[in-house]
Length: 82
Image (cartoon, rainbow, N blue to C red; front, side, top):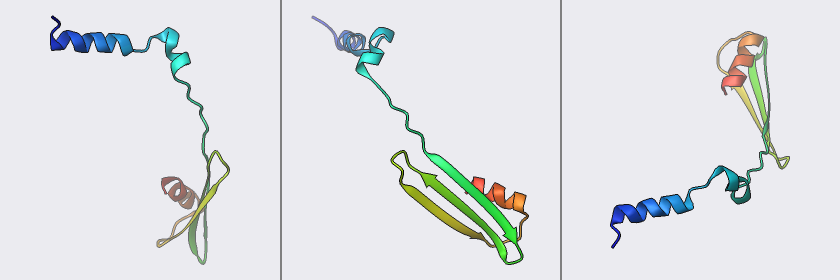
């Protein structure tokens, strides 16, 4: 008669993937997103533009107006943070 611990060990051993059968069982396709961002500062204010493009080509655009004064470099950093 097997105890509960031995049944669990047998299950884990039987269903644990080994290096030789990982490729056969599991395949992952990496499809990265693209990210574009820009920040700009002028006399009228500071703005940030962020565009995400999905692997299927869907564009998601987000525009932000910052409520504080910043240089162009600071606006670029804010775009990255956003």
